[in-house]
Length: 615
View 1 (cartoon, rainbow, N blue to C red):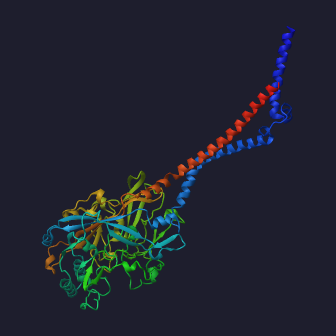
View 2 (cartoon, helix red, strand yellow; view 1 turned 90 degrees about the vertical axis):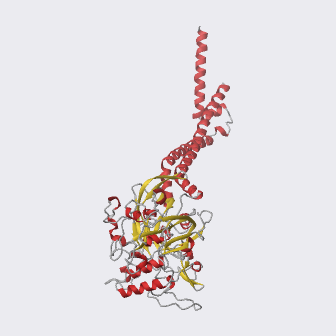
């Protein structure tokens, strides 16, 4: 028995001694040396300090991973938004100058199938012909004409270039014949009807009757209507070339193309960012105001290129070719330098990006009621929109073609290339009269677009003569097929069928960035004609008959692959990059921390084995 007690006591003492020796390996280096005279680098104090530091860094990386996961997405979104401003030399500015998408213009004519019956007082029966499709290119920086003002604004003067795409067109515009209103003839009749004396009216009517085609309706090719056909009337005020017979004097005045539409009149091809409209030049200053003040503040100095190669490609609207006058509605459109538009770049305030500050160098148009909100330069230039659009946001787009702004509001979500967009459309009363009896078409804000001494048409049709006073062309704009217009317009003609999907004007915008993935401005050109007892051939035509002759849509339905890819990456980049960054930090942190823990576990196990062996 005493021997058993002694043995148990010895075993207990050995266990206690082993535990004490194991503990000493981690707390007293001198005791470790008693077990092993040469511990090696793995058990050195330096190695243990490095391992502790490794564990500390691991904890730091783990914390950073969590912070990146929580904070980085909003930080990256803010950084991306800051790149949305138009800054000289930036990628965003370059993509604004040259968008990575090919717009097309689709044009349709309205062929009058019963011109003789119309002259007899019957309804016009119209047949839509087309589409004829043209590739559309906008050059915003021709002749280096973009001007930076240093106050967060820039001015640009675009040019448009159209090239026929025969493969996509429904027919050959060079051979497709259409019967349409004779626009120069009706413009001359309209000018004559405005005369206050019988002598002046009869003189003007004589000029129209004795020159040109002298027909209310003419047959031309589609290309002829757009790019030129022979008609003497538009060239009456022009000097003929010396090799041609001298022209008679004309009461319509001199100057190239003025009476029948110099430069930009009645052009549906000019969509938002490229349209140029005629500006009324005041010969007399308003009482008590300087010229600049009369037009609403300081007038910007306009950029005029000198010896421009682009200008050499521009044709006048009317000119003598082989001693015969050629006139086309859009003959002068290709490469024509449009009027300058000054917009905010978003550098100082992103919410103002694309807002029009001045048009044609001025803050007022001098087209509509003086001093009214309608006559002020305002609205958004649709070539660039601000980021952060919401569904309750109402956009006000400046459309130079219409000489006004038009409001657009959210309709629905639309997906393009797996990217969600907000569709903005004009409300039903966008072109409504202020005193319209049909409630859903009434728009009291449009009251200041009705100008004294000019026609103010029913809802849905915008009379353009107030902003084309030097041409006096009786032209009106509407949506195609009188979509969202007063029912009386459809009753006056046959052959039109307004459809929302075909004729609605819309923009599908990525709300986060303000980039349009689809945009279709759609407008119809109409001529407003009236019968006259002094002109027997048209005496049976009703007063103010709005006759459509052309409609067009510009823009694109879908983004290009390059455009969609870039936008898709920008949308997911904050989340994906943040997730990737946080994963990298977490993995590194976990590796470092686990390495530290593994070292100390190994060290403890190794020490235990050595003590056991030693005992």
